[in-house]
Image 1 (cartoon, rainbow, N blue to C red):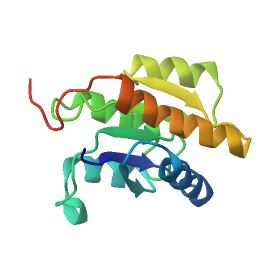
Image 2: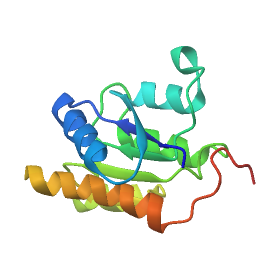
Image 3: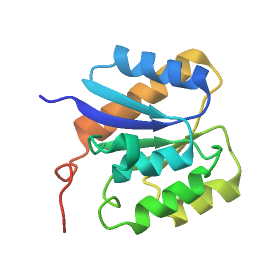
Length: 146
């Protein structure tokens, strides 16, 4: 089985390290790509500039509070783009605000998860995301057109 391509859009190096460790310890073979801001996320997804050779991710883990371009704007751009909209986007953020949750779903987020503060819970959440999206859910082929 080929590794699952995951794009993590996260500006907190500590959360990046935790996500990397959790995914490495999980049962789903994956390759994690990381970008630290919203502009880099869209460049990666659109394969622009230094990301021209990037593989299309099978899943995007997106923080809402990002520099340059926030996660809400990134989510809106992904879901408005016919070439990107089928990529599942999981919001993984510290925000518990109802407004953020509602707005994310209105922008067609596939899932909204508040980052747990407990290290063990964070590991369980990240591993659960990978397990759910890649062993339970049936996704369209990577890069499929309508």
